[in-house]
Length: 242
Image 1: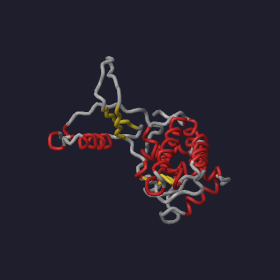
Image 2: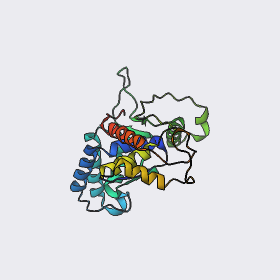
Image 3: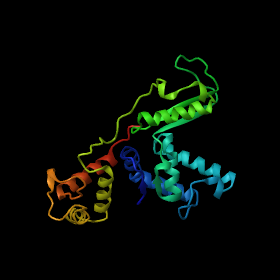
Image 4: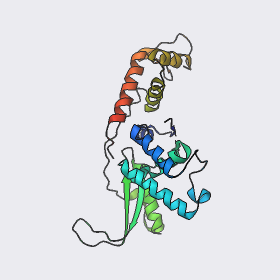
């Protein structure tokens, strides 16, 4: 399944790409499209504008079922629906810090009854301080307490989980690794990919390559491309740390 991922931030891209490129994700999307009778991607991911209220509830129920079957956190609900209906994931479809609101009977860590309304922030591995602050502002605004709370000066306690990939600016980005992985899976050779990268390089012909290549150079040798393929393939086998 060739899913387009149009996410600018490398950390967020890293959260999403190794999840949606897994075989089990593709199988679950096929199940969802069959269950929802989706024959072609829709132009918008707004159910209320294209289906009835009853159908919208069915869509939400099936997406939630898929999320649980894939053992993904709630932040991936919008990612799943975006793939089902558009086969594309954009910056708007993924938020690394997600504010959740629950109602009902909840209990604190001591077993005491808690208020019926409970709020929490779910973090992805790539979440950063500004993401958590944004979710916190959403919580503050919901309470209507804008004038009394300064989120920038408030202390937040939260825990990050491990990243599935170390971001290192000295090596090709995960977007490049994914591009190479998909090309090789489509029967392109390492030599063909290396030649393409050289032809597309914006630097003048005859410039230095290797470790001392100039900034902006997109020339990569076969060894680097092979390593990129193997690294991305390993990411797909790795259990997500959500």
